[in-house]
Amino acid sequence: MTDNKKRALRQQVKSVISDPVLPLEHKVARALIDTGEYLGTLTADELAVIMRKVLYTLVDEQKVAGLDVPLVHNVSRMDVSIAAGEAAVSCEVHIHAPIKAFITFNYVLENDHQSNNGRLRLKNNRLDVHEVTRPFDIGAKAALKVMGVRHIALQELNDVNGVIRRTLPPQLRQLGFKGELADVALELQDNGTMVVYLTGRQP
Image 1 (cartoon, rainbow, N blue to C red):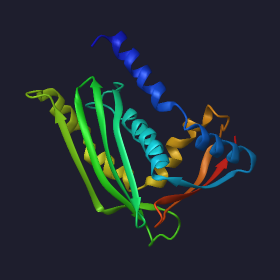
Image 2 (cartoon, one colour):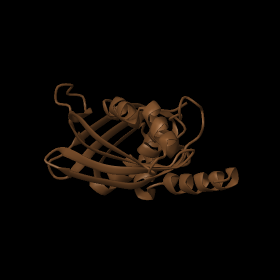
Image 3 (spheres, helix red, strand yellow):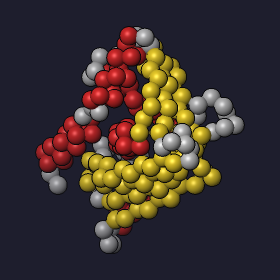
Image 4 (cartoon, rainbow, N blue to C red):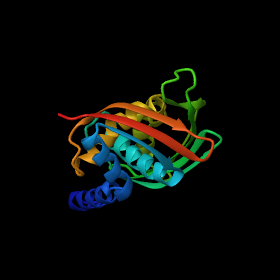
């Protein structure tokens, strides 16, 4: 894949990923601008769109074999279901360059009742990761090993609230919210939704 093609594909994927969930993100941005806080309820589908953007951003931050080489990638699948106060997540990342690979993640998030402050945690600290590369592509296998995908994902999923605090503001900047999130509280409900409470700091 030539550099021009890589840049074009990267830009195309990024523009699709960054398209706002218009009703939801407008509502969040407007509330944070007007009152400094947002309280709302997300369906599993809305949470899936948010998680898709979060995952794209997390992968975008990673380096290949320690080199600051931008990955050309997209989140090819993101399925979320919420039931009995838990969110089951199954998703797939397709890396196009500089290596070619598919990485699937399966995990369950639950309310962290011990912290009692609106945090989510990885249920049983269990994360299933499956990496698929082309047959005999030793370079791709080695690069994924050096990246330590499972370790990175475990680290991030141990602080879901922190990940959202870090990755949501850039999505809201195009909608007028120029600040940062001060607090993120999340609670999965038995009725298949998630309550979200955000507070923001304007610059």
